[in-house]
Length: 227
Image (tube, rainbow, N blue to C red):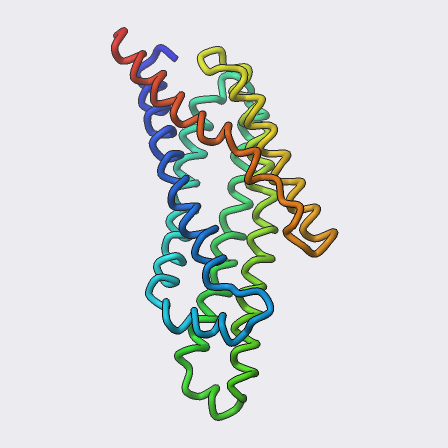
């Protein structure tokens, strides 16, 4: 990574990737799990009603994540393409598939929020039916996340390969990225095969995704000092 363009791409990619981490934890993991109480439609409905603003912010956060993801993958594509054009293309394509899935999936949350504000439904359905519908929509959102989950894993595998071959990034990070990608894919398979989230492993295999942006920023910083 010697050219000024590569340094800028590394800085951009590192910054965007770091930004995704807290946003992903808040918008995709913490808030949905906080609101959705498994098997308890009444409690889930109460959470929706009491924390509507926070949930709306989580939807916006999820949208922002996908937009950032687009800019991130483009930056990584141009930065890593010299080390494998086909792998870089697959990295790009897997991301382009995941973005519309993840964004459209937020419609389930939006619909759940519409239910709690709909006066017309209260005259047609009982409160128990409305609460059960809201719970169903949140469960549908969880299923949709797991569909996008596999593509969040698939894009990491060619990325890990490219990082491994790059020469200016540690090969260990490339290996860790591939492991993280496999973890996401395995999670999707076990989730739908066994209808449970008890076997999810991606929460233990994500280290490469944390080390990559930090290393990119560090390498860009060193390269600028040497210019």
